[in-house]
Each structure stands twice: as structure tokens, then as C-alpha cells.
Image 1 (cartoon, one colour):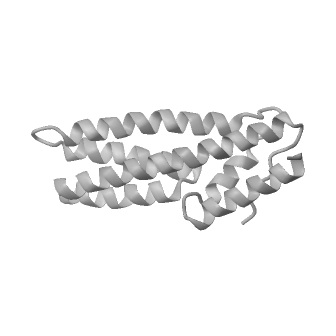
Image 2 (cartoon, rainbow, N blue to C red):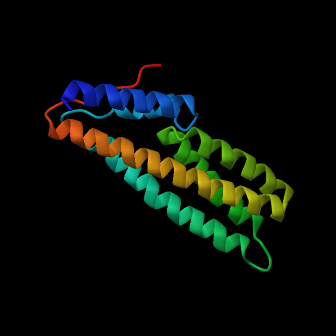
Length: 152
């Protein structure tokens, strides 16, 4: 596959993530910050997001498993995850966090546990999709091409 075909495949893939609501325009803005002086910027930001998100999701799971749930702590973790999700354009994960926070306010443990499951599923989906995206980007750069930017 030549560079042009890989670039088209990447744009088609990114557009499908947009249509599915997995990513939003913030991801394209993140891509625009990447240039020759910092060619791994998006991959670095996404990998930091993965690390932080996994830690927050584990913290949430532990906090919701306590005998006396500290809903302020739970809400704080969800708020952090919502912010980092929004900053990379992870739309569906961000939306899950918005619902989750509502249930924290209500101190509805069952609804919070359901949101945690949904959050874990959305995170795993996002991670698998972004792993593919980053892999295709690596292939394009290795072949001497540049990363195309999504248009909105």
C-alpha cells in the first residue's frame, strides 16, 4: 500500500470515528498541534491520557466498592476523566462522564456502578480505536508521508 492509500485509509477511519461519536473536533485540533518539531505529539498525549484514565477508572472502581462511598471523591475522579476526555476529543467517554456526575450528585450507587461499567466499555473501545489510528499514523510516517488532518 502506498502512502496516499494509507493517508486515505487513515482519513476514512478518523471520519468513521467522528460519525460514530467516538471522537469530536477537539481531536483534529490536537492533531494541528503536531508538526515536524514534535512529530509524536498526538501519540504522547493519547498515551498519557490512557495512563491517567486507567488510574482514574481503577480509583473509581475502588471508591465505589467501599462500604461507605465517598461520592465527592467519586465525582472528583469522574470530573478529571471528563476533562481529559474532552481535551483529546473522546466524545462518547466524555458524555458518559456527564451522566455519571449526575448520579454522583444524587448519590445513586446503583446508577454510578452502571455508569462505571459503561465508562469501562467506552474506554476500552476508545483505546482500541486510537491504538489502530496511531499504528496507521506510524506506518505513514515510516513510509515518508505526513499525517492528514481531519476536516470539520
